[in-house]
Image (cartoon, rainbow, N blue to C red):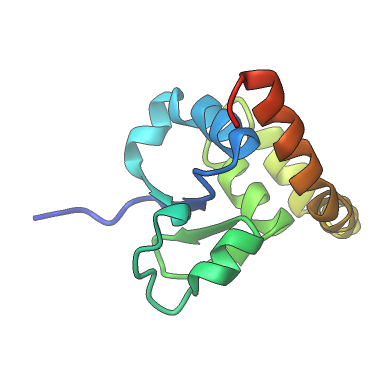
Length: 124
């Protein structure tokens, strides 16, 4: 019998920034209770399209609720004791709105940051 993961984390494994950040979380003890899904592999994700999953960060909780963007980070952070304070802060309005605005401002910068990270990491 397989237990339902605390969270299912959908991340872009083709992104060096995403891989580095996810690696931080995966080293935490609580990460063993989560499912980690690299959406860049192109597998079927159910009602979450691969395009949507590649465009924004998503997590699904054990009740099946899907969170996106800053709300997804907030939900993820609340699962880790050392990060819980940030998760609670980012879930509290008006901070939740500010975190989402910051996330949306980051998204257009992400491709350039990915290219820079690949150059610095020695990957073409």
